[in-house]
Image 1: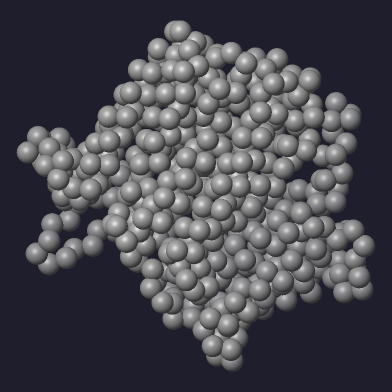
Image 2: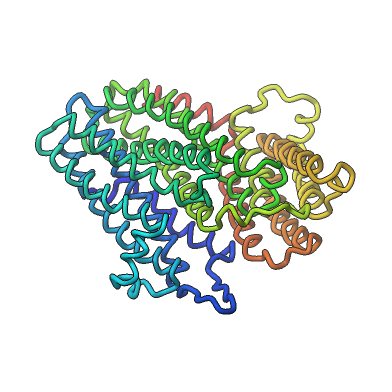
Amino acid sequence: MNLRIGSRLWVGLPALAVLLWACGLLVLRDYPGLPTPPGLTLAGQPLLRCVRDITAMITLGALVVGGLLLPTPSMRVLRWAVAWALAWLVASLALVAFTISDVVAVSPWDALASAVWRPFLVDTVVGRVLLGQLVAVPCVLVLAHLASRRRSRSLVWASVLVAAGACAAPALLGHGGITSEHIGMMVSLAVHLVAVSLWVGGLAVCVALLACEPDHARVLLPRFSLLALWCVIVLAESGLLNASLRMGAASLFVGTLYGSLTLAKAALLAWLIRLGWQQRARVVPLAADGPLAARQLARVAGWELLLMGAAIAIGVALSRIGFESVANPDGNINPIAVLVLALALPLLLQRVLPSRSPGRVLAFLRSFPEVAAIILLVVIVEVAGLHLLGSLLGLEAGVIAGALALIAAGWLWAAAIDGPRRLNGTLLMLVGYPIAAIAVMVIAGTTSEWRLVLVCAVIAEAMLAAVLVGRPSRDTDAADDLEPAHA
């Protein structure tokens, strides 16, 4: 078993733990007359789900890359698939015990009693879905083992289909869609899960395989690039459909925890698409030079896998929150939405659409980036704390106008620091963002969200520190364009 496959995906575990703490999901809620699960279950169940998802993705990716994308099935990669399928099975068994503990409110050890798990797995929707996975994963393990011994493409196809079905099964459980009224949501989520599993697992396995056998780059990189492109299209469309079915108002995306986490996932996907396009435009043309292509792939894929791990953590947290928690907001904007709209998306826009020939306004802001930083901080306090736009335009129109104002002010700041005085504008944001976040919390009266505000402020400081030590986007893009030529 190659433990280095997708090693950066495991950043999702600490990220998930922090997210659960920040969202208050590790706090026991006592209801009179009803039993509550132990504290170990509150933390263990979502963490095990994250482990289960990562092992499932790597298993499916190994089957597709090693069995279908190469000219002949690779025994090395199919053996990886067998080992990761075994890890998937162990994680699934542990997850069943913790899920029973969560639903029935018993300890995970008591959940192993036949009088508890047997009726749960047979008589409940959640239990039947988990039972289906427990049956499917051993089938994947056996089929992958036979395929690795016989190098049979038909056995590989059979294992891929079974593994894809097992990866899609959580669609019946996550995000609250387990009743007949949510068929559209379940189908779109199932397609979404299969696409993301192919993309994430396939990328992790490609990096590991080319590190061992770089000669496969000539064939593997163009084929996986095409597969990844289709996966991105499918998961973006299915994610958009799923979100539109669940949240029909713009205010839900920025004013609720569920919606703001969905917005954060969308921002991570946008950054991943940019990195994926860099891979397709700059790494795939180097496929003829296997070692060079492998190094370039690993360099960019390292960042991709980190962002993918964070996205997996957000997905697990969303399933833990449940769609039922979404309610009409009171006009406040969630700290996560502020972070995404004011920093994450504007920095991406500046990278994708840099201003090569700035006008007078941008030229002035690049000379005095402190002005752009102050404008952004003022907009954050107004939109998220004072809600003047909401008072003037109404809830929905005010939320939309506020979101656009945050993006516009953020882009002006990102464009202003793309110049000779970027240090001043970035340092001012480093100092000012936490102050603005605290001011918003006090003005809006959301002091109970201090954990979430603290985590978002720390993430913002990390992003700003990365901007501070990095190079301007124009210089970075030029360096990336020239790097293959120098190599």
